[in-house]
Amino acid sequence: MNRLNTVKIRYGLVGANGKMGAEIQSYFSSLGDLCVLRKDMGVFEEIERPQVIIDFSSPDAVFETIELCRKFNCGLVIGTTALSEEHFAKLKELAEHVPVVQSYNFSTGIAILRRIIKEYASYFEDWDAAMVEIHHNMKKDAPSGTAKMLKQALGRDIPISSIRVGGVFGEHTLIFSNSGETVEITHRALSRRAFAIGVRNAALFVLEKEKGFFSYDDVLESAQ
Ligand code: NAD
Image (spheres, rainbow, N blue to C red):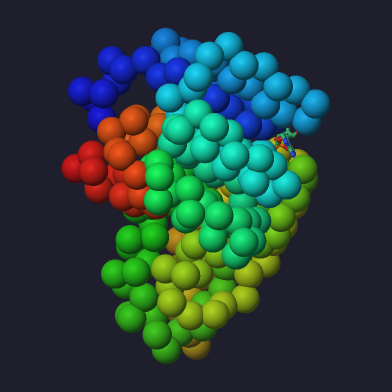
């Protein structure tokens, strides 16, 4: 990604007044990028056509975001969670024309953890497994999108406990246990910056692609 760090991105942001919206603007502007379109509840400010739109808002906003991408013929990076099958179908339709990167978690640590889980899942086949995820008390969905991704990587149904307390940015612990021992694997986001870095990697990736539906794994693989 170093080669691309000299690129200045002119981006649109849906959910601009939210917690992730603030972190994305803070990180992107520290690298010289420009937010040229801001959208939130009752807010729409357009300075110029964005090269890419970023959506960290609510499922309610997503169809309008898709329309914006069509209008500007630009790609999309979407981190909003709790999307429905209909949302995914529409995002995939959009991806026939422009690049779309969708992930319920843009942190590199979670991408690595998913790979570890996939590789070692078979060793834990006969063990009990469960997950505990902890997030700040304003988070609307449960279980988290990340918990769903980790469960999918494991390849079996496991109980998930969701705890909503204080200002926790995001913590996921996978627990494996048999009659003699327990293994726990934890990922802890130390700030929202972990996600904003991944979002920028994805935005740069979008600028280089013509069209298609991509995951954050695709973004990381392209950087290796
Ligand atoms: P937040 O509540 O702080 O911000 C959401 C913003 O979206 C708010 O400003 C709200 O007014 C705005 N919004 C809601 N509905 C809207 C609509 N219809 N049109 C325009 N704007 C609308 O939440 P947050 O913590 O910033 O998280 C936002 C989303 O991102 C959530 O779905 C969250 O789960 C997800 N998230 C994803 C990742 C990831 O890595 N994929 C990381 C953190 C959060």
